[in-house]
Image 1 (cartoon, helix red, strand yellow):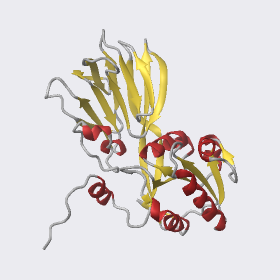
Image 2 (tube, one colour):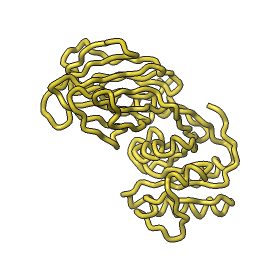
Image 3 (cartoon, one colour):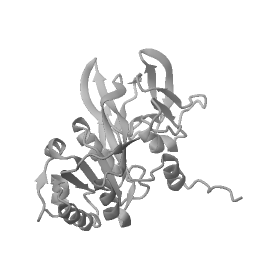
Image 4 (tube, rainbow, N blue to C red):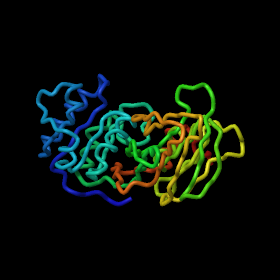
Length: 295
């Protein structure tokens, strides 16, 4: 990670839409930033949910073009949505945690203003995170495309039985998976759904993508980490239909024969971390790992 000391002139504020705690936090942030000479824009959906009075409202596109930083108030879901919408603009993201775990939202609510002061003072560090490009091909033609920061999941949808997927990596046949589905996760997403399916935790600097079977019928179908330069093709074997989920937010109903093609995106995002941030300390806290032994 490198020090992030760029001058911040315009800040975008994005909040969780359905949280009663967000409005007060956003207003406090807005006042604080303006007092420090920072112009403040609020994302239009957030403004609609919390009330727009006193805010300058902007679309995600306008935020992406104008903002030096985006401050996201909420949890990991809010951060995921914001990251996907702002990825093409390369706006750095800072998270204030109002959610539960908060793997990507580093600033605690009670430390919000002091944390933002440190950001303005140039004391944060920057870390790049990869995204996935995902598309659904039907008869060789693209019928859906989007980005994912955490993961792409192909599963059985609403049916109460397993599906079959032909799995290929860089065009080479790997196996036919009979399971509830498959998770393809970035290092960022390795601590999300993939972790609950016994996938590996990947440090963000690892240049890899985790391919994690979801409740496989054959216990020999194990998670595997592949190069982040590789492409994964997951083809639904007839007669099975399925459903494709992208960061648990967007979804697409796929048919038998559809191919879900996943690879590293040309876009990436920048997460800004406060002084003293440690990935391993974050894991110890969020996953409740044991404390260091006493001497």
